[in-house]
Image (cartoon, rainbow, N blue to C red; front, side, top):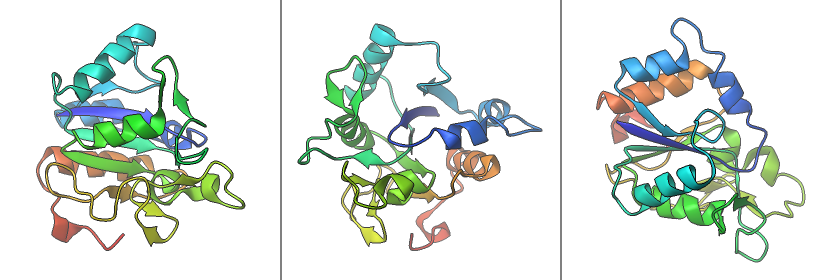
Length: 189
């Protein structure tokens, strides 16, 4: 299975937590489950033109993407453009990339409270109009509509936590890779 990871508005703490996994490490656990990391902004070697070419190939359907993981809240501002957070070197907002890639993914996973619900980034006055992938705070319908389903039929799989426990992330991804996570295994959130 191919996994692509995007980091949106937030601190990157879920990635840092994931790197603390031991016995096995996160990389070992994912590899043992047959999960190949296509790209992660902090962990992959590809940068600049190489990363952009990879993202474009995934978006075009030339490279299959089984799992899209998003860490951090999605900044929708200003005025719904998402331009408060551009994906460096692409000329496109992370909001736009997330919407386009979510439509291609078999499974979409929100890693952390920010990605799931907007978290700290969406607190207070929320000048960036940040939200979670499928929730805006406690309300259904964040960046993706409440009725969104990945190509495999599941809604966004929220792994809340600030930061998430590395075992929660690796276990969820391994269940997806093994075909052992169905709609009945998910709660209402």
